[in-house]
Length: 94
Image (cartoon, one colour):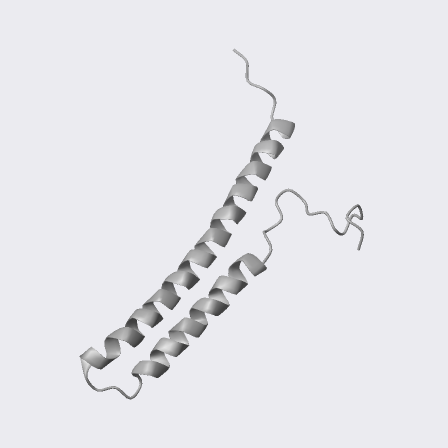
């Protein structure tokens, strides 16, 4: 698809690419599963700390990735609302 085609352009309030949330989420989920699998057969707490830390890191990666996605999407919506308000509402001059 050419860069100048209408399908290649995104409108101003369109959500960011889902790749921005999908990649950190996939990595984070993989870390959670890896941490969970490493502590599954360990009875002593001292043997579970490494796996717990890996799973906790995975959860943080998911939260940061999705949070970044939501932050970018919210900024785009705010920008679009600002443009819409300035185009539709008259300027208030006293």
